[in-house]
Amino acid sequence: MFNSFGNIFRLTSFGESHGQGIGGVIDGFPAGVTIDMDFVQAELNRRRPGQSNITTNRKEGDKVEFLSGIFEGKSTGAPIGFIVWNENQHSNDYNNLKEVYRPSHADYTYSIKYGIRDHRGGGRSSARETISRVVAGALAKIALKQLGIGVKAYTSQVGYLKLDGNYKDYDLSVAETNAVRCPDPELAKEMEEYIAQIKNEGDTIGGIVTCVIQNCPIGLGEPVFGKLHAALGGAMLSINAAKAFEYGEGFKGLKLKGSEQNDVFYNKDGVISTHTNHSGGIQGGISNGQDIYFRVAFKPVPTVLMEQHTVNADGVDTTLQAKGRHDPCVLPRAVPIVEAMTAMTILDFYLIDRTTQL
Image (cartoon, one colour):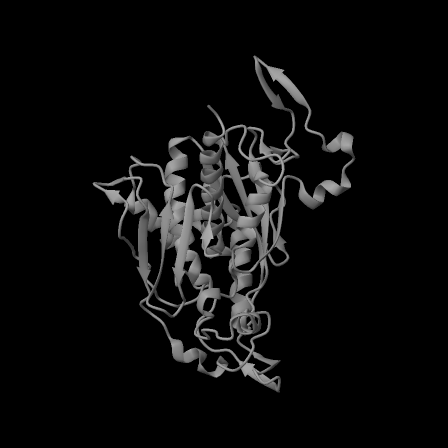
């Protein structure tokens, strides 16, 4: 059950980084939706490795193969099964890690919990698992597009380099024109140069992905244990390397007084809205029709290409030197994953909302 995500729209994923492939089964997807296969593959291409000089140079085609649930280009309402075959594993790069616990990885916790672990690329804990999320998220985006709901994420900070404004200050489509996926071209260039420098040092760096949901209908979310922002936070923190989540003004709002933070209502031609959106589009755990925006902080990738001290499975002090192909910064490839998890969450809550009304 803990390999599944969602309630009505539900993804169950399977596969390991150096296994035969990564795949999933999607249940609860509405019938009769036209599936744009090119769009689904394009979303995977945004996530795949080797797309620029600031990502891992592992070469994978990441071509999705659908096995069920789609007939003559449309969803049938049956479970949608799919798989992406692994093609370019270098498992021998990890032989020296078989009995060693890498700092800040899941090696130790997996070993203690299960008594066994796949040391090749991290196995199930590898970020390659997110392939299944991007496929399911692409389908969720297709469904949301029919409802007029848009989801867009972008890199807003890498290390000390960050955007000064909020999402309204930029043309977010520009983010896809550079390797970092930042909507400010000049800052994107600085970010890319900084990541390249970090990579040359054999080190890594973290940062922040910002996401905005537009035209979300009023009423998504439940008032107590099914709060929409809690679901979004859970979805984001399930992504590899994600360490923090905040929505609306978040921690910045702590500097404001209540009178400054409150979103005052007004009536314009019979439509109730708010003058500001400090709440981030969610009040009382329920969407209020305003833009929903949030930020996700990602830590530096723990695999650094320099010698580190650690212990082995017997608790003996040792050193390790990581090998292989690794991202110096997850941000560029995390952007489509954040969008995917967001789209799945919103579609799931939209379907839940339909079941609560006559």
